Image (cartoon, rainbow over all chains, first blue to last red; front, side, top):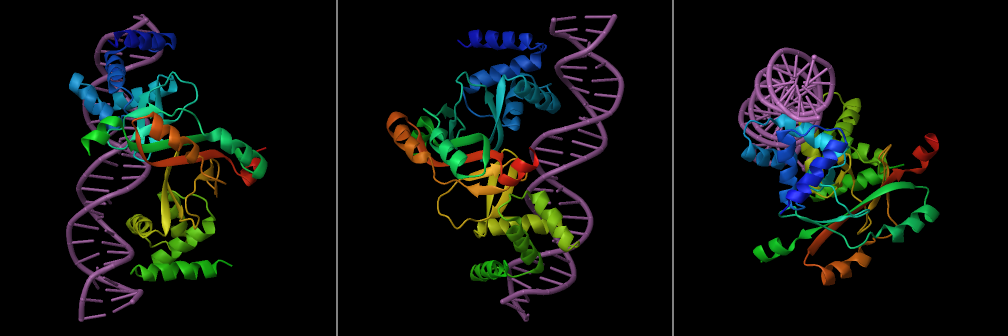
Length: 146
Length: 146
DNA sequence: CTCCGTGCAAAAGATTTGCACTCCC
DNA sequence: GGGAGTGCAAATCTTTTGCACGGAG
């Protein structure tokens, strides 16, 4: 199933000069299984502990940081606080986020284009980047909560 | 200058059945003076202390909460963490946020309309609300950092 | 006079750091 | 064998809570 993806990630790690340790393998597996659900540091830690109860808070925090720095996962500040997911293959994208289970799907397109001209011509603001998030219910949660 | 605005805010407080205490007056003044800069809890606390060194952390936290609940200020989760500003008169709006000084300006329009049809017709996601923030440099910081 | 709001101190969370030991490469 | 990574414990930082007192209405 996702063994292939895992191998790919481990390979990416090696390329960046990161060591392939048990804690890191578990964390990557967890993110693969999360299937685009956003995980908080605490979520991640809980899942890691189910696999190996000896792994420490600080290891998880440090690895979240390392994986973000090395572009294997991305850090997203949502209404909910800071959360993480595997980095997307897609170039520029924004997310629809389920407020119930934190599953995400990419938006079909970025609506910023429409704004850019207005900001650049009509204001003194110099834009450098932008966030767009749509919150709501994913397919599953929508049915479940009906 | 902004005495009129302050009076208005104090009146709004009274209408909601909130008591008009020194701590609250100071906090509202600070938000008026902040002139649409986003303040963190710590920022707010520091500014409050300059006015009155006896006011406590917990008072500031409790009042931030109270003012949000009573719709006098709004709570914004930005890349930076949780921040606050006076609530805007404008109905539906999003912000351009200066990453250097946290000053904000409202966006000329909301780009969500364009997306809505795509999401509702093309996906199983049920949108309930959305965030759009543009990050960059405001007029002042742009010049200052040139 | 009555409570809401406050100060204070302590608790509860969340995240970071120092240090010695481990084990990946 | 060397150095990145880890576990553990303690430190930091942020936010919340309980309780008794004080002041706004």
